[in-house]
Image 1 (cartoon, helix red, strand yellow):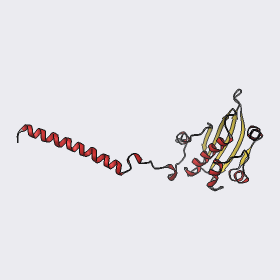
Image 2: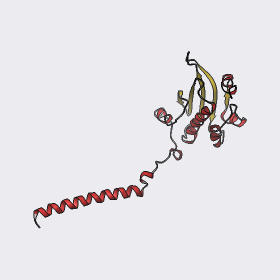
Image 3: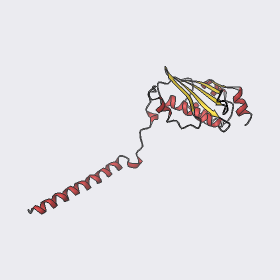
Image 4: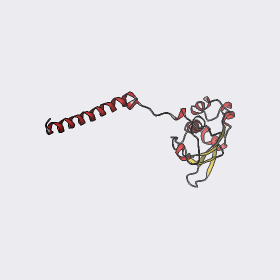
Length: 181
């Protein structure tokens, strides 16, 4: 064989090998889901909440009511949600509360209690006032209670929700939401 033909044959075989690798890779990707592949969901895997991952875990919550304060101590998660002005509806608050409960008890196995407060902040003085409080404990309520809270359409809670989540509404809550509905 002539030296030029050897070089040409080796270049062609190299190009063919690269093309085959690319084709094999694209077939392999399609075989395993490709663009349709979905990540393993956290709902099937529990997370251990720690002080090191607290911010990362809570940042997965997409809530319209911002978190004003958070604390994690001895399996108790304490959260304050901040309501400013009158733009936030009570249904938004319920949805945000349900998101916290859902994350805490469906996705984490080391949270035994969530102490949740909804606080109103005066825009002028920045003084905070309690609107609503909940003491939610693992095992004291059925899992469908989360969806019940998420879709609740009244400013007053049912007796079941009050009992399950140890809910307390203040007079300020009643003035803010019950008078306007």
